[in-house]
Image 1 (cartoon, rainbow, N blue to C red):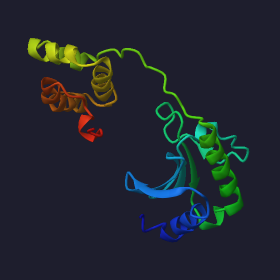
Image 2 (cartoon, rainbow, N blue to C red):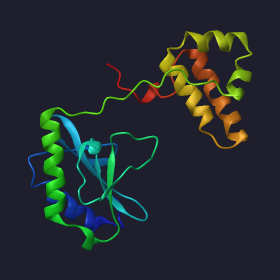
Image 3 (cartoon, one colour):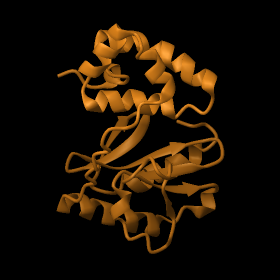
Image 4 (cartoon, rainbow, N blue to C red):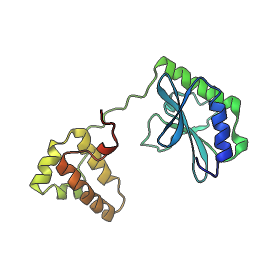
Length: 186
């Protein structure tokens, strides 16, 4: 747990523990579930601590406390940021949590929209001049091809793009996706 916000995070935990949700640990943070679905998590950062509502997009947010953590990247997740203990309002937090649990009980979930095929960045296209690499790349699923295209495109500097190309070549030749090692093996 983030030391800087230890007392504040303990207070949030105490509030969430009063609900019928089940407390677990996922991604190294406390996460509370309802009906087996992630509802809210808590975390501390350098300048703030936060409640993460996993399907926060469905919350009415009548008090305008929620933000999209990464505009353009996260679709359903909403964050409630705090910078001081005095900002913690138990009654308001409970109201948001109860609405989030009701949404889960109703089965409301965000369904991601398919992105379609992403354009291949020029640096990756240059690397695919190698016939073996191109053949392996084309044998990957469209999802994995997009994963690699996005990984290269998101780098701001040319040097980073080129170093990422070198990193992914062995993965492509093995026929695996960029994030396969993190996915559950069943």
